[in-house]
Image 1 (cartoon, rainbow, N blue to C red):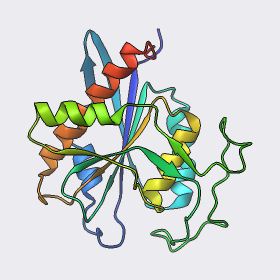
Image 2 (tube, rainbow, N blue to C red; image 1 turned 30 degrees about the vertical axis):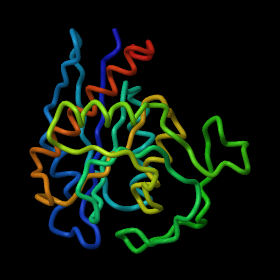
Image 3 (cartoon, one colour; image 1 turned 90 degrees about the vertical axis):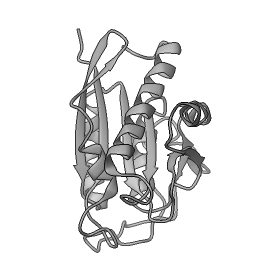
Image 4 (cartoon, helix red, strand yellow; image 1 turned 135 degrees about the vertical axis):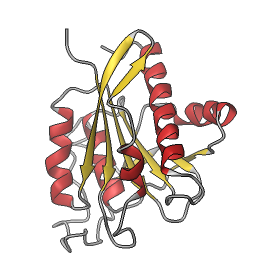
Amino acid sequence: MPEKIIIVTGFGPFEGHEERNASWEAVNLLPDVFVFRKDTYQLRKYKVPVTYEEVDRIVPLIWNQQPDLVVHVGVHGKINTINLEHCSYTSGYCKPDFAQRCLPCDKITLSGKHATEQGCTMLKTNLDIERIAQELNLQTNVECCCSTNVGNYLCGYIYLKSLDVNPDRALFIHVPKINEPYSSEQTMAAIHNVIGKCLEQLSAEQKLS
């Protein structure tokens, strides 16, 4: 029987978040196993350096493990909610990464099923994030929102790369700075709850192995 795997990534330090990145602080607190109904999933966590080169290296490594779900987490310095990102865009990546390197072109070449579509401007997750946010806002004290603004830096880049592989099983979550307003433990719990909701949807759609 194949292993049941969930992979969650957080980012390392970058400009404005040199000491610690709220995304990794929360992701690192997640348990190593995730129990969903009667199944136990390995929860594998990756701390991703804020460089295009590392994203290019890590994303294939992640998907080669054939995970049931991949959740990327990044920090957003101007939000005070947990933002579930609906999509990522194929152009606009002009900003140097934390290693002061730029991509050769601001338009990302896709390799998945949309690769031949010259006019493809965005890729979307197939997860129903509106429903996830609505349910969690009724069930928890941490506010979740849906967003279409993942940005055109490393957050958008890693999300686009994963959506290009499998939009059924990929999600990006933006989290606020630590204690603005949520502690790392509260943010971790929110991520944990989102994972559970994603698995519920995948199970209902018979997409879990």
